Amino acid sequence: MFPQFTSQAFKHLPVVYGTGVNYRHLIIIADYMTCEGGYKPFNRTGLSNNSSALLKASFETTSAFLSEAALFGDFDTMVGPSARIVVGRPPEAGTGAFAIRSVVEAAA
Image (cartoon, rainbow, N blue to C red; front, side):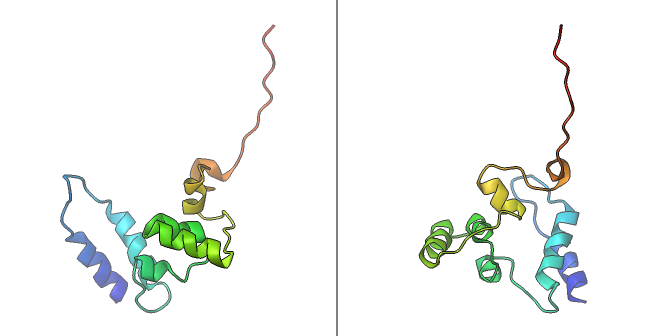
């Protein structure tokens, strides 16, 4: 019930700066917010229990999350897309999910 309500509420969000929001992205957010059977805020409070230090830092209050991670010796496994993007590596999704290597013959 709540995911349907949330997704319906997202449909009526105002368009900011003349750009649209893809409805499917909002459905993903609604699913994330309700995947554990209750309501989980999609902000720094909801992400504070996440184990990925770089994911938390990429969302809000970057310096606070990075300071906390350094102070308590947190680390990041670099599995999630946010962590990989923060350090300049492509996420392991889409075209970054695999490597294709082909033999290229030298020109004569």
